[in-house]
Image (cartoon, one colour):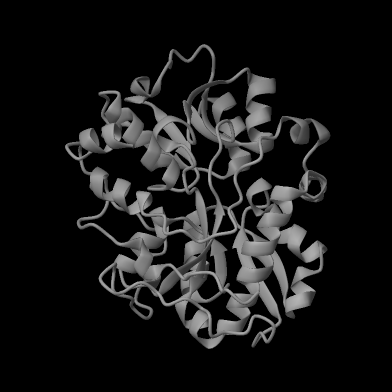
Amino acid sequence: MESVHRIARHGRRAPLFIAAVAIFALAGCAGGSGTPTEPASDVDPHAPEVSEITVAGYQNAPTTPLAAAMNAGYGEEYGINVELQVAENAPAMLAQIISGDVPIGQVNGFFSVPAVIEGADVRVIGEVLRGKPGVQTVEVLPDSGIESVADLEGKKVAVVGLNSGHQGRIAAAMIDAGADPSKVDFVALGWAEMPAALEQGTADAVVTIGPFQLQARNELGSETILDLADGPFAEFPDSQWLVNGAWADANPNALAAFQCAVVIRGQQLVTDDQDVYEDTLREYGFSEEAIAADVKVIFPAANKPAQIIPDIMYELGWIDEPFDISTITVPLPDNC
């Protein structure tokens, strides 16, 4: 990542966009200036304060550990039932978490860090995935004239959420290639909208994953110009579970139960058992063709602080000061 960061520091500043900014008046949390969150070793994951937990996320491969954990009875073992509420994008999930509509959501540091800086009390409670080459790619049509990220100047690029990890990595890669990402028109679309946007010409390049990547390649003959989990972005911490701080303080045992059932045991389950993983994909509506073409991401049963994310944001000028993400990272319980 060094070459990307060294050049990006001198790049143009990007505007900071957070869809939930109107909700940031909720309880504050010092942006990266506090001390790391204490380990949750004094909680009892087997005695949750609440039994029903609704989480916001995408119904795709990265959230298979959640469904697999519930199907395997891990939720019942800890006294919780976790339901996935399908969300359109990360800004929408962030707004739901901050407002308290849902206590937990699948939101990465590109959204959680600015939220904390603006005063929101949210915390990272577990990793969802780390990227693997081939899983998330930037696709273009074969006759587009776009051969690399350097050709994206003056083009419209669709990402799942503005100022997201997708946009950040595309911008960093462009700067590293000597191009100017401020000349790109980034637009936010849902995963399912990506192939149609490419086909209809409403976007010149799109970020794809899973069945939508397969659709773009098989039906449109799309070509990859950037792999978002390769080269300087290898094993990128693509997504984390984020929790509403007030809910976490009121329900520490339920939070620990979620971490044990989903983050630790659910993620280990789909990592170790390919049949369980593929059965969960079928439950999510994946076709056999999509399952055969799927590249499984890395599901770490961990919550390592994703420091690379605020580092990229600072180098790109998306935040004004360095941010220590360990200050909002809740370690996993050690008594599952």
